[in-house]
Length: 137
Length: 137
DNA sequence: TATAATAATTGTAACAATTACAAAAGTGTA
DNA sequence: TACACTTTTGTAATTGTTACAATTATTATA
Ligand SMILES: [Mn+2]
Ligand SMILES: [Mn+2]
Ligand SMILES: [Zn+2]
Ligand SMILES: [Zn+2]
Image 1 (spheres, rainbow over the protein chains, first blue to last red):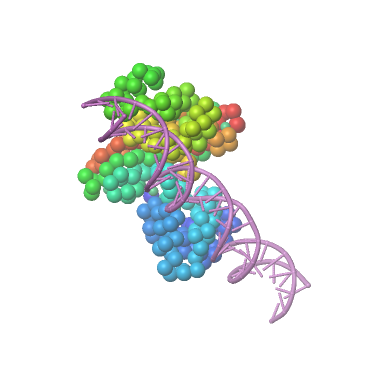
Image 2 (image 1 turned 135 degrees about the horizontal axis):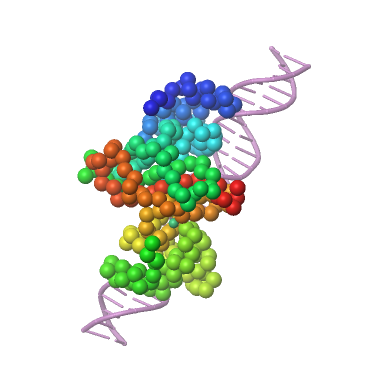
């Protein structure tokens, strides 16, 4: 429930010794303002308007860095492109197969368990649905 | 729990008017005998030994056909390659980040619900975990 | 401040997974 | 056999991602 703020992020970044360059800041801002699970291409295309020198490699590098630092999550609901989410709290994702929108939904992934996994160390849990959203029905 | 048999599959294929060519048969056999969630490349590389003329396009085409007919499921646990599963019963998948193996585990995906999705039509539910398997710990 | 060391960004090339497409081969029917 | 139809094949094109070396920016040091 606690909102994502620059202050919290800045503290986390300092903890993890990640330098907040101009490009990284812009990418983080973008993720905070556009919580629509954007692709690399969407992030790049939109930011590139105001930062003509931005390189797509920087977008890739930064996202990889943020994911490794557990500040951003990759969503692999579709096999052809990764999507990124600054909201790292437990929640599920559903993709509307008509309009392509990926919606968040509330689900307690922590409570998902299986006796088959007793001897596993579990690091990450993802719940992906596909269907048709209310607007498209 | 009911095992995947050629008989069941053949009936389904007839229902859906999918012609069972030599290539399609071999790919189906492979998926039944190798329930390790193989990639297209693994399927192609292995089958190509006994079928030197096999084309990778045919593997792609056949898998797409089988997925559309709901006889095979795509697993997008990793963003860089699709994996295929002939076991279409509800179950979860966990990928060991050390050895790369994708294990099945028992979980009732049908019972996964969220009040946020009341107005959605839900067609597919996937549960993906990542972690370390008992052998690698 | 100047200099050196380090970190981050950029642009391009390489790579890998997938799709498009047209020609060739196979299948069934009259 | 001739014809229509389906499937397969091989290649080229496309797309998302990574590798890498050169350039630029930042930080530490003298
Ligand atoms: Mn989300
Ligand atoms: Mn499985
Ligand atoms: Zn929709
Ligand atoms: Zn393992």
